[in-house]
Image 1 (cartoon, rainbow, N blue to C red):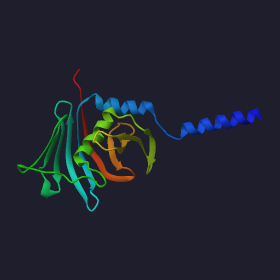
Image 2 (cartoon, helix red, strand yellow):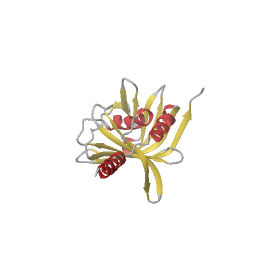
Image 3 (cartoon, helix red, strand yellow):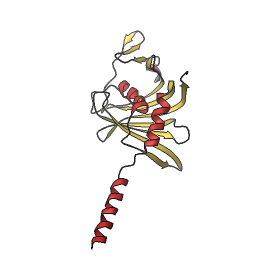
Image 4 (cartoon, rainbow, N blue to C red):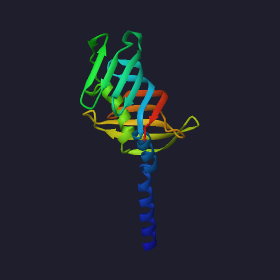
Length: 195
């Protein structure tokens, strides 16, 4: 009887350890890659859910530790040229010389601009709730899931990185169970720090 109890206990411990996947080495590699970069840039396609409407944007995104975040809308044409600068303490949005206020994402009071910045910062500093390998259509991706409150509200960001280069392909941001923003990344460029 004692032997069966030990076997059951061992089985339960094994199953509970497998319920959440968190690869600390992958978490550290992602953090290290983006923390050690002097700058990062990408072409970002963003789909934002505002509740009654969904909007799509093409954005030239840049980040540097010195200058903070810079986003320039390139599409839709009606907003092409809109620029957003986000520093440690301030956010400046300009378009054709006027101030522009983006609509909050559905179910939140959060500006989409802050969410895009938050996604990048989780790659640098995030402690993943889960990180592991997922196979999608025959390709393996590292899936990095972080819960963040840096925007003032709790959001879950799930980013899919290429396995070999750790470059982001896509990211989904959730408020509760609802996906409020989807980002796809192309033309990723990292500039190494000068030692």
